[in-house]
Length: 532
View (cartoon, rainbow, N blue to C red):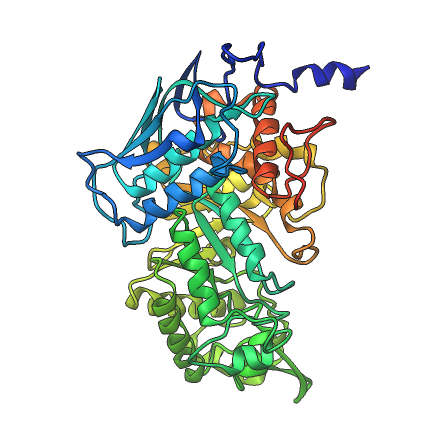
């Protein structure tokens, strides 16, 4: 049968005879695939009692670097998940010390990752030691993740690692994941677990689509009524300032940026509940209908409100990027409103409402530029205004010829993020991961200069049919396919059949680490974690 034949390729690693004095020969996969990796069957046994992380003498970062000190503790627990001091994990081995020596060239333990962060690292694993070298602490985190994936256990529970040499760096600087917390509120623990899984997959940007039409869960200090009146519940379904700080710090400790999205002028129905006169009154004939449309772009109060809100966003979110949305704006309400019509006539827009939206978005982007923030917008903004007067980043999301859009955006000299082929919110079968794996972000006709403007891509998990009950199975391991596409050398990772055994093994690692990743095929995971 076809399924029986297919199952023959499911095993990634060859496990040979294991007993008291015999070593395990196994070549373990790392996900996403490093740029260069060489492994041999020579293995070292690891004893939790004699295992340690340390800083090398030439490291600029030393003890007291919170990012790495915390990472050492975290990865010890990941590598030895059920270790206790009284445990007998090394019962089949002669106890031997193993030291992971970490050297970071530059300081930066107290900062935040940004668009220019160097995530490269070199990892050398030999008998009794591993040497991890990186330029920054963010590269060291990526190297620690790869090291953790190299460790494996035999049938008796003993730990091993093979001799390995890795030279690695990401293909794209922006490797994002979008969560929508407006359509369904996601509790804090679900967001934090998503950040954990992102770090395991070397994704590095959390795009927080925090508010939208259905609800406004962000608790603003400047405008507290936005969440008080716009959230599903003003106490149980909000993100307090403390919650937001916890997300940002959890992400920082894993080398992940947090980019918030406050989408306007559309997708703002929940905003209007707590901010009077922000939305455009819709008319039926010559009288207001009692309903409201997008943000009103014709009054000064709108821009004063947005400036104050964005000033708060600058204070709360340290990243230099902020997503301003600008997508799917319905013009029906603007068309019905006589005051909007008078404003457009005054501005010389005629009846072209795309010019009105462009005017609004240009004004908002000028505010963010004055706050030293870089604006990201959905591709609709570029489609309406192909000759931008200011620089911004375009996120391509529409289906169809998204590569054509990438070509147009980069030809205009703008940076671009690709999301269109990475929408994961639809409940398609897990085995369709290959459709995301096969994406080629640079496969459009353009110059080298144009292709340098593609800063990366992101997977998008919209919230219409996703809440905490199904978030992680729907995200993982499909998001891992996009993660490898955005990190690894494309020429070495075009064959999904070759990638499948590594992804299956990585999915088992996610399960053992407490991530409810869906299965890829019939079978089971060794040392399977069942305490989900």
